[in-house]
View 1 (tube, helix red, strand yellow):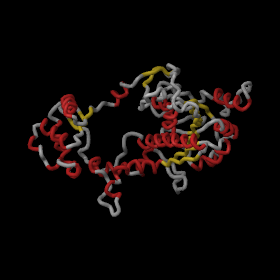
View 2: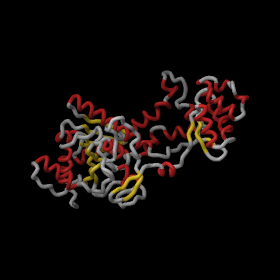
View 3: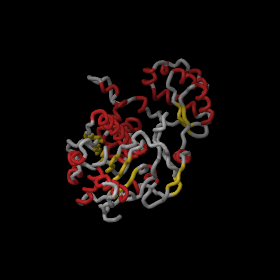
View 4: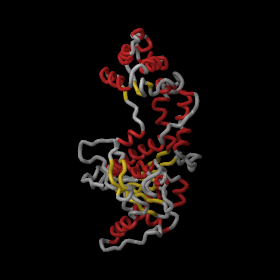
Length: 395
C-alpha cells in the first residue's frame, strides 16, 4: 500500500472506537478516512464484521477490508479491571469516544459518559443504540432489520406492492453511521470554539423515523391532515426499472417536455398534450398511468438507444449495472496480509489536499496493542518508559 502524503482535515484528532458490526465501524471509518487517529478497541472474542462475508484472511472478510481501514486495533477485555484501566488510559489521550454498546452494558462496564469524562473532561462522547436511553426499550437489542421494521420502511413496500418488505441493503446501519459521523464533526467544532465536550446520543429508531418521513409524512403533516402519509410518486408500483428491447434501463421523465419527448420518440403522438402530464400536480395525481405509458414505449428500443436519446433530449436516465460490474470498476490496492483487494473510495472530493485517503490497511485483531499502549506509557512517564503488559493477556 502506497503511503499517502495527505494527512486529512482531522489530523491530530484521536478517536476511541468501541463499536461493532456495521453502524459504528462505518462512522469511525469515515473519521479515519478524514485523518483521525482511530483506535478500535476489540473484544478478545473478535468482532462480527471480520467474518460477515468470505474474505482472503480468517480475520478479514470482504466487508472488513474496507470497513476496518484507517484504524489501529487493540484487544482489551473490558470485563477485567486491567482491561478497563487500559481503555481509560487511551481515552485520556483522546478527543472523541464512540460506542454502540447498550446503556446497561456501558453502566455495568463503568464506561458511561460520566466515567469517561472523569478522565477526559472535554471528551466528545457519542453513544448510539437502537432506542433512546430514557425509553422502556433502551436496552433492547436492535439490528438493521428490526429498525427498518419499526420505522416505516416495510410499510412503504406494502403501500406500493401489497406486502411489507425490507430494503435489500443495511440502510438503517449506514444512515445511522453517517449521522454519527456528522454529529461528531459538529461536536468537535463546538469543542474547538468553546473548549466544551459533550455527550451525544444517536438512537437508531429516531434517526430512521426522521429519514423515512422526510417525504412520506407528506400531506399528513398538516393539521388537520390534508391527506394520507406517503409520497405518491415514490410509492407508485410502476416506479421501477423499465424493460427495454434487450435489457433494463431507468428513465425518469420529470417535466412535461420530458414526457412528451418520450411520447414522440415512441410514436405516441396522441399522448402529446395529454392533461395528465400538463402540470406537476396532474403528473403526481396520475403517476401510475403515465409511468405505465412510458414503460410500454421503452420496450420498443434497446437500452443503448434509449440512453443516447435521453442524453440528447435532456431526459434523466441511467443504465442499470450489476453488483459485479460495480465491484469490478473499483480501484485496487495491496493489503500486507490479505493481498490484492478492491477499495471502496470515500465518495467526496476536496479541492485542497485535505480530502479522505487510505493511510492504514484494515488491521488484524490486536495488531497495535504494543504500539498504542507503548505510546500511552510514553505520554505518562516520558520517552524512556517501557510499554505495559497487554491487558488482553495474549500479546
